Image 1 (cartoon, helix red, strand yellow):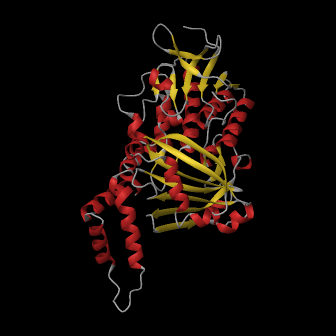
Image 2 (tube, one colour; image 1 turned 180 degrees about the vertical axis):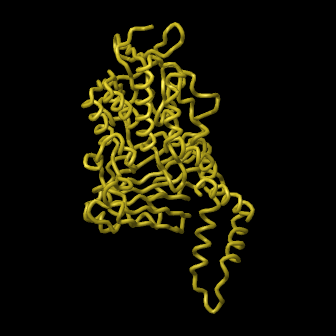
Image 3 (tube, rainbow, N blue to C red; image 1 turned 90 degrees about the vertical axis):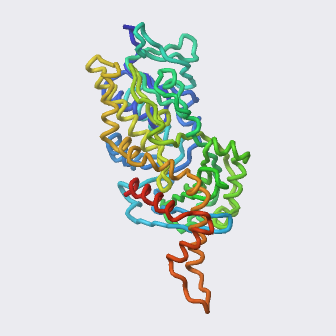
Length: 436
């Protein structure tokens, strides 16, 4: 067996990697946390919503430390066409106090905070370092990583790959199948738009640290995807997320879609007068449960975006919470395997068991059919126009004509948009089985 320099090497200091390093270091293991950027968060452009309850086990009273921008007390889902919009808006005062439901945050802040906790627990941060490949022993067991530093091999009992979408380490380990994972990846583009805090709070009817999370469907010219608007302390995160294949086939540039959204009659008044501070883009894995790689190999575990742990379920767009949870369980599995001196696939199998018993894989498995439904032609192109027209006609007062019944309106509107009622019923059943 190769003599190891560390017990655990974690590649990637995002939420999954830092949670794994923190967990393993707290258990007394020697841990290296490798980050390709000059500091954790420097390569990430996320400015969205964090669902922090997963931190209950990892960081007691985490809400007193989390670098939150705003606590989400409003959740809105907007369905739009180029001239219409229908919005369901939920407000909950209870979400504005501990233990909170969600918070907007910037990844540079969030990643830095989690990595500092890992360092304080004893992990060694290795910044500005790229893991270029895996080290193996004569039996093929993963025993560490190669890096781009001179003499930069890091040997370890367990490698935890948290190296992002299309993980090179997971691929080198043979954990991805022959499925074309690229077709399940999406591109997110985002603008950070600055507004004075008092203007923002007045415009969005917020107070104190309350915040809004708005998810949008029908804003991508029929390309599979959606949009979002999140409020920060004194800025707005406005963006779209679209499937790579659909975007390439359309010939449309992502900034065009973002410009469309910014100019939409329902969005333009909300961002009026805002100053562009940042434009960023990021790849996301959105294929769900059926596109995940194998999560365990001989001497290696995979977590976070590297494991396609991003839930694109229309009303729920989550990733950071799954990353933190998976990282925490990966750290625990490494501790157990090293204590038994068995870091083979069988020795690390507890990781999969922990994920199955937790929300991480339970939610992904329950909603495994939803990405296919959400990104389908009907949901992306037909249903937004159908629902907007249905709402417009239902609330139209057209005297002296009598008011039409909802069933008649639905049949007429569905026919106009080429939607058969059996398709509506089929999609409703899929949705019920997933969300019910």
